[in-house]
Length: 236
Image 1 (cartoon, helix red, strand yellow):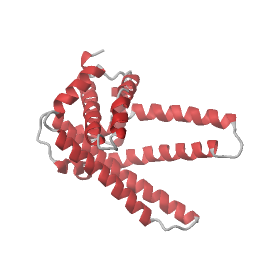
Image 2 (cartoon, one colour; image 1 turned 135 degrees about the vertical axis):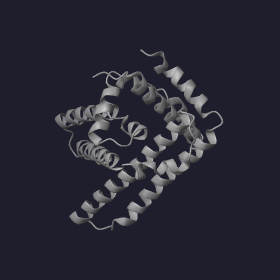
Image 3 (cartoon, rainbow, N blue to C red; image 1 turned 90 degrees about the vertical axis):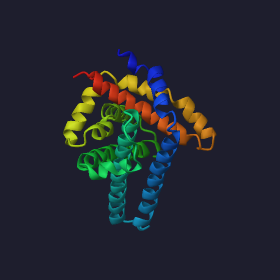
Image 4 (cartoon, rainbow, N blue to C red; image 1 turned 60 degrees about the vertical axis):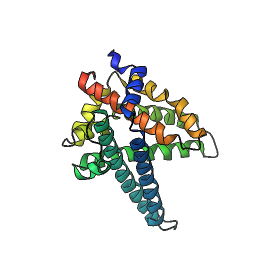
C-alpha cells in the first residue's frame, strides 16, 4: 500500500493544507449548507399539499431537481478544495463551476443516485413500518442496502473526477471511479469511519464545530482521491 494513503498521513496532510485557510473552509461550509437549506425550502413550497398521484409525481420531480442542483454545488466544492490542496487560487465562485463546465454528467449521476436512495427509502419503509414483520423482506432490504453501499463506495470519486476534468461523459467518470476505488473501497470506508469521533464533538458543540470538521473531512477525501489518481492505485 502507498504509505501516502495511510489514514494518519492523509489527515496530517489535510490539516497542513487547511492551515491558515480554516476561514475559507468555514465559509464554504456555510455556503454549501445554506444552498441545501434554500433548495429544500423552495421544494416545500413548490409542491401543493394535496393527496393525489399528480402531487406525488410533482414532489418526485422537485426532489430530483433539488438533488441535481445540490450535487452540482458539491462538485463545485470539490473543485474549490482541489485548488486549495494544489495551492492554486481559491475562489468561492468555484462552487458554481460545475454549473458552467459540462454539468450534464453530474446531473445524470445525480439522478441515478437519487433513484437508488429513494428506492432504498421506500423499501425500508415498506419493510419496517408495516404491521407484520416479514423475514424475506428484511433479508432483501439488507441485501439491497449492501449493494447500495457498494455502489456508493465504488462511484464515490465521480464528483472529484469531474472537478479534475469536467469534459468527460457520465460513463467515463463512473468507469474511472470504479477503477480508482477497486481494491480501495474498504480503505475509504475505514477512513470515513475514523471521523466519527470528531463528528460527535462537532455535534456536541451545537453544530458549530461542523464549520471546521466538514472542510477537514472533505480535504482528506480530496487528498485520498488525488493520490489514487496520481498513483494509478485503482485496480481493474
